[in-house]
View (tube, rainbow, N blue to C red):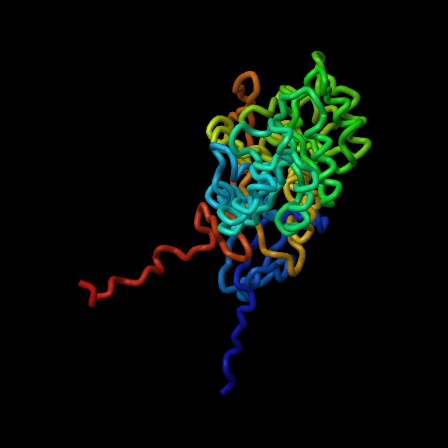
Length: 396
């Protein structure tokens, strides 16, 4: 008698039938994604479900690398959010805290937040030694480029850049010290500095920032990219040509539909998509990664391009190309989205909270972190309730 041949289940999880968008590997089409342990084993057409222990049917959904939010707030400010609780349900598997800690407070941030989080958490270290704790970012005496660079070089595994922001004084000292620290630490600098008459945006971007440095809140009314006729000011294009990067940094007061629409139509797209996530930005604007991506989609950007600027491009910016892609053997950090259709209103901010209508909204259905399903909105990776065993009579 010949024994019946059985198929060995070699994959732990199979995502089947979705549109896979993986810009790092030039993939955009209907593919299956197979996972073994913490890593991606295979991305291919029509992988047999018999080879997997768990199969999630994601037909009609979009599968991407886990999102990378390059500007969020987890430490050092009132209203900071919890990385896992606030990011993983949105498909964000990597977050960068933007300046909450400085060289004096980074170790506390690392001990209390970074090492306690399931998701990947990195830091942009503030040029201010205390970071954003207390009266934030005004103490010039606590802005030490040498000590900041020393902390970067001590923890290059966690510190990926320098942050300069919110200084109310007249001079360029914080920015120039931040640039020096970033130069000595081998990282980029992100700046959030509204223009004043002694510190105009044009001079900042053309004379003080280096290629690869980044201006966040790029569509904010406080840093107007456009003039009264909704034309992008020429020096923004000049800055881009010399390699300055632009980050969305949505926030609770830093995203204007009017500015973003004009800029995108004129070709000044963001280099990275980010949320500036903290409690007010979630409450007032739903400033999550999927909602911010939805706003860019409604303003005319292509979905695959938005995904690229939310995954692979920020991975490169922070120096972690092992993230933000679905390549074979890559860490299985994956997001699954529905492009929901309906009658939706999207809220911006600035002088007021105004609504922009759209018929599509990006909604996270599933998040996989290191091969483990950590968010499953509709139970696509779960067994049916009918598989529940009957009550054990011994417990009656």
